[in-house]
Image 1 (spheres, one colour):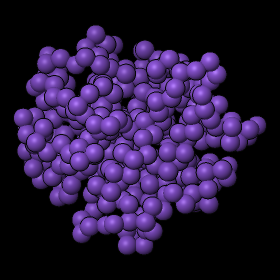
Image 2 (cartoon, rainbow, N blue to C red):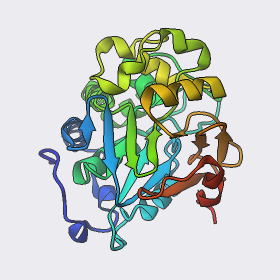
Image 3 (tube, helix red, strand yellow):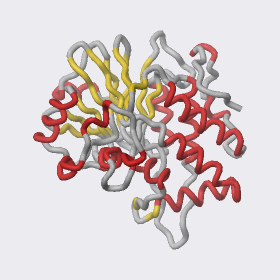
Image 4 (cartoon, rainbow, N blue to C red):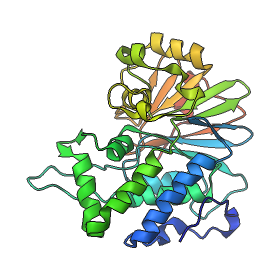
Length: 313
């Protein structure tokens, strides 16, 4: 049983300790998810709706993972969270954790990606100042029960079926703990570098939604209204696509951000640059990537392509 957020000395963390969780034990799963929520809310780096870090140090920035186990292990290894620790502690972003690719069929497939979400909640309890789990649209859809389709599969229904296949009539306890975790997640991670600030987020509002978007969301606590589908500012922020230069320049001025690191949009080659100052990362497919960043030296957009690391290489 995990009693709450704590910092475990890195040298004592057993290799792949998060995989020793009994993910069929409902009490252990629920306790872990709720401990992860407490760690998100109580982390020293938490400031309102976001987390804030600064150098020295390194950030391992990722895109969507969608319960891709091999790529998940790769980014944990890059961040030194696989038991093979280096000399320096590293920060890690994680988002869009659940709802993997599932085959379309007549019968509803079972999605058991609650297991990946539970492991990441465990990581947050062990490293609350290093692991930064960001709100994303699939987790939000699952928490509030809104419809979402992927490859013809009703993701929320498949996830619910996966939880029920393990926990049966007690599934509601797991769903309540998942909602607690999701609604505790920060909307972004702000990295303060000597050359300027980096904002890591799942996405930004679509340009057409900017008139309804409250840009003060980074400077305040989130409210229930922020999560409302198609109108709440948190909902708009995790669902946006198709950013353009005018929008990015507007948010750069409002937020004082010099580089945006985002996910959500599909990038066949693993990443895509969006002028003037955004990069989209994918970590959920065969050409998935992550991006290591020295927090003492913020990269320019034209430098990002050279530091992105392919997981398959």
